[in-house]
Image (tube, rainbow over all chains, first blue to last red; front, side):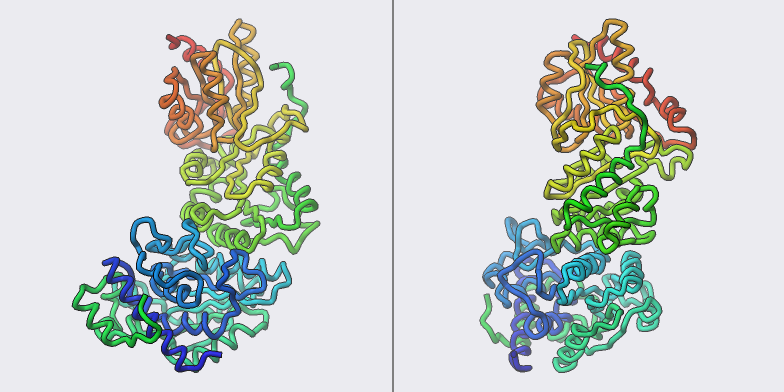
Amino acid sequence: MKSNQDLKNIASQVRRDIIRQVSSAASGHPGGSLGCADYLTILFFSIMDHDPAFNMEAKNEDVFFLSNGHISPLYYSVLARAGYFNVNELATFRQINSRLQGHPATHEGLPGIRVASGSLGQGVSVAIGMALTKRLNGDDKTVFVLTGDGELQEGQIWEAALFAAHNKVDNLVLTIDWNGQQIDGANDDVITLGDLEGKWKAFGWEVMYVDGHNIDELKTTLNNAKNLRNGKPVCILMKTNMGEGVDFMAGTHHWHGKAPNAEQTEIALSQLEETLGDY
Amino acid sequence: MLSEYISKGTSDTRSGYGAAMTILGEKNPNVVALCADLVGSLKIQPFIDAHPERFFQAGISEANMIGMAAGLATGGKIPFPSTFANFATGRVYDQIRQSVAYSHKNVKISASHAGITLGEDGATHQILEDLGMMKMLPGMVVINPCDYNQTKAATLAAAEYYGPVYLRFGRPKWPIFTPEDQKFEIGKAIQMNEGSDVTIVATGHLVWQSLEAARELEKEGINVDLINIHTIKPLDDAAILKSVSKTRCIVTAEEHQRNGGLGDSVAQLLSLNNPTPQEYVAVNDSFGESGKPIQLMDKYGLGVKDVVNAVKKAISRKN
């Protein structure tokens, strides 16, 4: 079992990895990646039963799908730090001939990736398909999926929401990165999401809240969600701070899809402790 | 031999799909079916009755259906998501592109009511662009069988093949003329008649139209080398090149737009390897309309006489 301090250390290193990947590629999406770093670290290091000796079908394993594929620097860092591939490969992020594509892909055979994502709104449906497979196979493990909040503007999400509730897909845990921001600004200025709790409840889902930067809360909530089998799919509304961990990136959409320059990179890294060794 | 291929009754090709799904239900426990509120049209009720737990009713939510199919394939199932061809392609192109084709998932997109022979429902439903959209996707196998028997065989073959496949079926009753036991190999054309004057490469419902045309032409002393090309991608390059090296002119026949269809694939092959006069039997940059299937085929240039005329024109252009 990882202690809270262990998890904090991993998350700090993951945030450094994010900044260094995006800075080195001079492109990518640091804001959402930083915001979900605590969630994904805890999921992979404390919640899921999973095997870094990657196997596509994931029989008798918990599975994670990233629907908001643009936060790939976070996904790659967590996979590498969890042992799916060598951390040194993070240096190839967004470079030519790399397995670490701008958005996650299976095409180059990167261990840990089970479906391409980037075009938004598709991951919940894919996760349902995997959850149905587990049900057919008598496999009681859980399927996790992460989406952005702006991503909820995609219609396919709500198609999936109807299906999962109707079919009582209760081995499915959707987490929504609720940072209130999207590329063009605040959700409320672009297309307001309104009463998310009310919407998901009305669609027949179990709704939970979590502070996406509180380790104890994340552990408790994700564990509860993982083990809950009450005939309802679970939706966790996860309040996060976009850019969390780097003061000048925090709380704004301006760093959604922008890489820091050399000077900004240095400042950002000075705020994130190197705990496990940089790649 | 043309005389081997006579009509032994009629059936819609989608019924061949339904019959194959019934067989696959018994034979392969990994096969699962999905449908977007068109179970009756896709003829899969027997599969559902026999294996209710392996059927997923997606409702009128095609995007979610394709995504779920990708997820089921990830877990090791062999999903057959099914709906009308219009909704199985154009409506969900991005879902197919990212979650199925780019991710190389073992998904068999099962698309019925393709083309103008859908008939009375009109142009909103008569997709004539699906082959083009699907063949452009890297790694996608595209199959357009010609009758009930071939559709059944194609569906069984698709289940055996690992990777994304697009299966295209039609709505109307259509002659059954291929042998029930004819071998079906993905990407391998079937030579239906040997001739030296002209090559016809036909797919789907146009195979029958081309057979009828070839019989008429034979009476006029024109011998047709007739190729039934059930697989648009991968194209059987060797069969086509071999045929045109003998006939030196070619007609392509399909129930699809001229842009992006079988004819385009053949033209590309020939321009790169053996430039050959080619005529197209296809819909020419037009939407369809309501009407009976045969009326529509005649009005939109897919009739037997259109194949005959295209052959004569192709022959007249030979060097």
